Image (cartoon, rainbow, N blue to C red; front, side, top):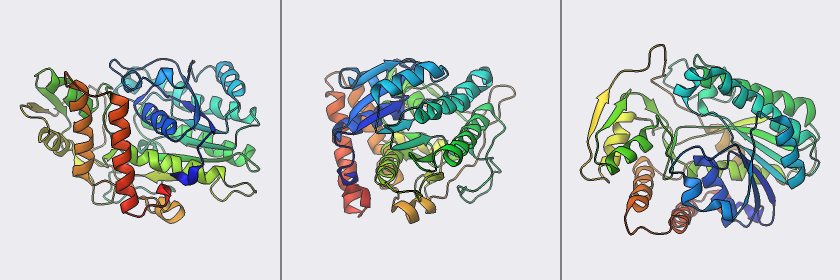
Length: 366
């Protein structure tokens, strides 16, 4: 996969203890990379990071992306070839409760990572992961494109728009002659191993495993749902393409890319719950339209991923039903009393996903 770029590469991942970061670390282990992860803590209990036993397989560094000296020391000591920046305060509700923390982590944390890159000559490529919520949401029915307005009314969305602006400034001001850099914006990601609060899939998994009713907030909001392996394949393929660009000017540097499902995959929260329930007998749910006072959530969000297709040959592999099945099967395996080793199960899902992508002729599988 990925033209075998990652074998023996030194890869620095921020936020490796989180949901997407831990899946990315597992995939890179599978690809033969030498990994250092940088995060302040394991954010949830249970956690995918612990379920997969990743601490024993990578350099597990504790530090806060708001601490510039800690970031700089860790990165220069490890001397990576590539950097994937995922560390973030990633919850909308928390951004209302702790707005300063959200901006400091998401905007200034990105600045600190890029300052460390500037001081680390070994780095050849940087992929900064932000969010589809970096766009100013105008509730229109067509997908947001990479050149559309950034920003948002809630602190989380605004902080991700700020991170994009910081990254673009650094790319254009300091990295014209390397390293090669880009940002990515992914749609709503689901999959096994997510236990964050206020996310519909982990809320369902926790409640249903305990035999409880799950509370569904904003059931008719639509999102571009995709399995976690979908954007990760895009991040890894983009990183591989960046690291092979050895002569300036780098055609992908300074660019942003959306990674999301096919245009016709834009389902409501209620549809996700009902689809999950098909794989989880005995479920119970209650629709709840109440949000916290003063908290605004967009009801319609969709991405246009034509740029990723045109520039990278990337498109989503799984349809909505496959995405739901992969997710439900992971949680059912985890909660089973005689369940399998979860790293083995996770790599099995990765292999099945790769076979499906190869059958669809996607270039990153080669």
